[in-house]
Amino acid sequence: MDEAEIEAGRLLFAGPCGFVAGAARIEALPPTAAPEIAFAGRSNVGKSSLLNALTGRTALARTSKEPGRTQQINFFDLGGRLTLVDLPGYGFARVSKRQKREWSGLIRDYLRGRPTLRRTLVLVDSRHGLKDSDRSLFDLLDEAAVNYQIVLTKADALLPGAAERAREASAAELARHVAAHPEIAITSAQTGAGIPALRATLAGLATLG
Figure 1 (cartoon, rainbow, N blue to C red):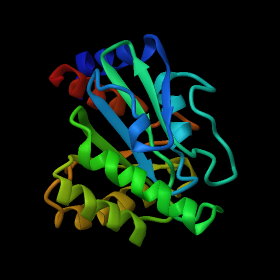
Figure 2: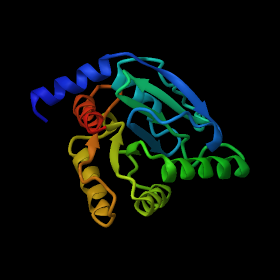
Figure 3: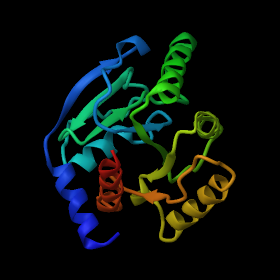
């Protein structure tokens, strides 16, 4: 990323950003507007924290130590140029099997059928690496021909060198997936590491819309 791209990302995410709508079923999705960036990942991977860090806010998206707090698809308008979409977490959330099935169906239908979806960011806890639930999502996104990118979170908790090893391990798996974007972002919502570069990447997607 050059300085101009970093600055473009900073300006975009420094602008107005607000909640648009929440949808617990596919029929309740808001009308399509700006290009959409979806944030997906296992429960408690740090989706809400990353959204807050990108937008420079403390409470745009609710954060919690209790997995499974995001119980619907939440849409946030970023200056009319991008829509940020916070998906329910998957994996070990302490909810009923029926609720898990409903969330899974909602996520699947959204990812398969949203024409304005520009990219899905698949957040992966850098301390733990990829899990089978992440791989299942990769397969779904490949099948739906939805471009996706891995974002490694919580990198501040790693020892020196561990983040790069986590990136290499993820890259080796992504090489087998047709819809995967090859670039892997390493981020920390706590320290801000990787946030300016990710903003710049997403600002570039806004210009394609």
